[in-house]
Length: 129
Image (cartoon, rainbow, N blue to C red; front, side, top):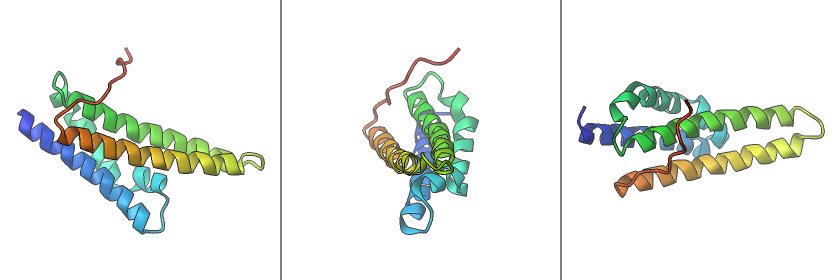
């Protein structure tokens, strides 16, 4: 697959994630729940995994990894936040976790898409072996 097609796919993934976030902002869902639980975002992460091998070794690999990690960490913080909400002591902490994680997801999608538009790579932690 050529680099222009991969770049287009990367834009599509950011667009799907942004659409999921916008539906939460203008709808009744929370940002985090919409990001991890709506069809556009789930389709985006599936597309990430499907095209990840094609991006390996290119500057776009960092964006694929950034997008995948954003989804899975959002899911993790969603579970942690809700687990805390269901405890008497952790209700407000859990609510705070959900709010902060929602803002974090907004930041990750905006920063990633902006950086892609600039033609730059995202910071990448070393791969887990």
